[in-house]
Image (tube, rainbow, N blue to C red; front, top):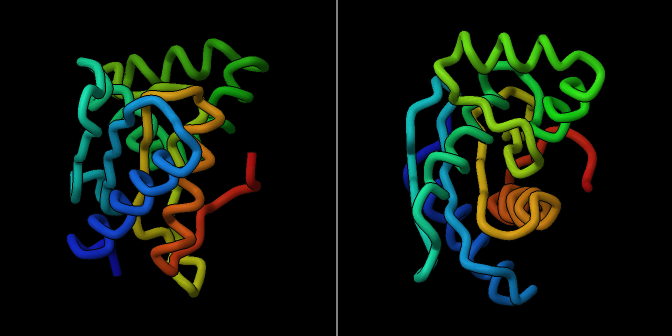
Length: 144
């Protein structure tokens, strides 16, 4: 199983709703399937340039390295050469800050990742995790 277009759209809508409720800055959301393909990419009105690439890099890095982008950041603090090397090997597509969250189905199987960019990294991660849960899936890892 992987993420469907309908599920990706539900995740994006939930991110937008949470951002509105929390009065966050304009966000960009990228939902990837388990193969790293873009299922949905959406931006809020007035979301700045470059946010797609950042949101995608958060989600893509999580998939490629098998850990949420917060864990990548924490590993980079301990082993900066690892994150630098992985980023280089992946053509710069790793953004090692919170906001990229792996998505598991009900059986714990990896089905994709969500990347959010536009507010603080902690808030990006929070709304991604909320939206994944609202879609009936499980965000991998602990809440921020």
